[in-house]
Length: 214
Image (cartoon, rainbow, N blue to C red; front, side):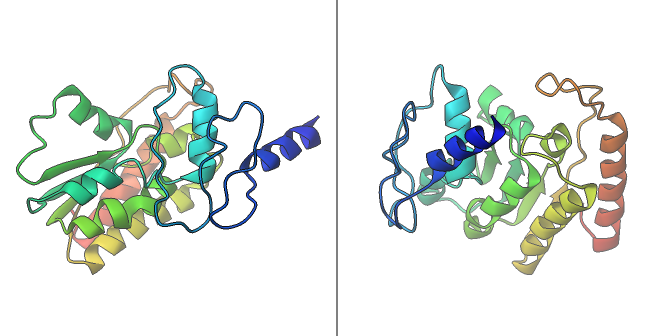
């Protein structure tokens, strides 16, 4: 059964050639999206109202970092950027709840559900190329929850380090946020995250102190 499932999954994400349309798979509404190196890798289609699992598979396998999510908004920015807020749903929900603070050069680039490797993938597009004075990085909650699978604490720390080092290399001030406290995750109820959140926050404080980050 597992081999059959894996075969079906590989078929669903396989491609014919760079720029070719996706192999047709029954039930895949995104099968016509282009793959490979193309001029415009961001097709426009609505977020699903029902089949979120298929959308999530599409996102994780074809735009893992979700570079397309804010590509148009990045291109449209005209005013100088002072601070980019990089994060997951917590950051994403700030602008969703009240967009008024995100004016005058304050830019929200939170994406719900993202883990630190996904943020690292999009860090160049969503932070560096916007030339901000500073970046506020909040990452770790979804790594601990296991949103993109299993990972070591060292890898999570390495992903955050990678973002901080990239920012510093481009003269961008780094502000590292603590991982918010949580006794449980509603979307990952088997996890008991208290000790791992505490450990990651201890590392964040130490790393910020050693490297002069806020």
